[in-house]
Picture 1 (cartoon, rainbow, N blue to C red):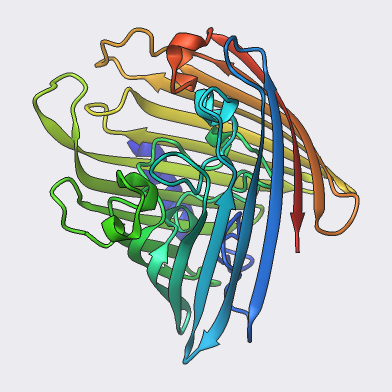
Picture 2: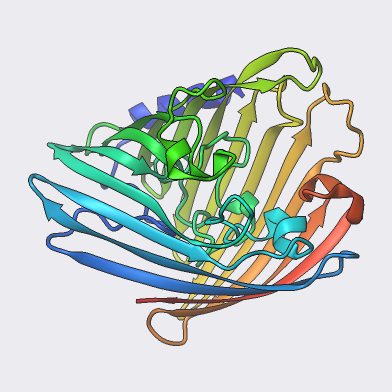
Length: 375
């Protein structure tokens, strides 16, 4: 694993780029670097059906509204989102990794709400950018061209971000992005609170700004990325300093950390992504993660296929937490501008795929239909 990261770093520094690479846009990412006032929004409706016993089929919806405006030398950006309340026995609650779009804006009682998720200012600095305010850490680290947007691409959580990265939810912090040039790689660094909105017990903004509570720490991450020919290499490391209980020593705590790699490749209408991650085995039951995704574009239709796996650490004594494998197949159709229709099917192996392992078998299927409209 260490040697893999060394090789990727060397390739990034030695390769000759063909173009500069900006931060990738994804669901909820505000469109930066546009003059004047920019206003965009979208609605996503998902219906999912499962063979799991005592798990209810479910229809959910989410709403996004984001935009920015010029202010001084930079831009002020805002992102509002909302969603319907997931059912306690529904798929989103019982098989959470099957729907990464569900439950992103909930109150302390797990009811859906309208929420201010991002509010930040962007300063352009020559060939770089500085962000400050309420930010989404997943925007800056571990991105992918084909596996990073739960409203348009894969909806399974294992294909949106590396699940081993201990990201905080929308949180207060800052990020620095240096854009890759013709003769050098780009990199991103960020520093934030370890607790975002959804990580606090009350999910309130009052708790969000209490940065020095006893159970809180910081989240720090750094990523080096480089486009080379038809590839994009990303490799990074992160630290979450909030104290967490060790899985093999109940009376002691440890900090979470890890490394990751993401590689995108394109050949004509075909695209691939490979992800790998490693995290501290002292506090997580799954400390290795690997995923591969494939996308094929044909006119107004897109086919996606993904496979992800988490390996259980040898330190856990919870033998009901089986290795977790997730597969997803989807077909996205864009009949008119702004509208996408996406049927999909998921295969989930391992009880660790659910927040309530007593109600699931080792083998579960989830079929779904997603409607997304952006304006």
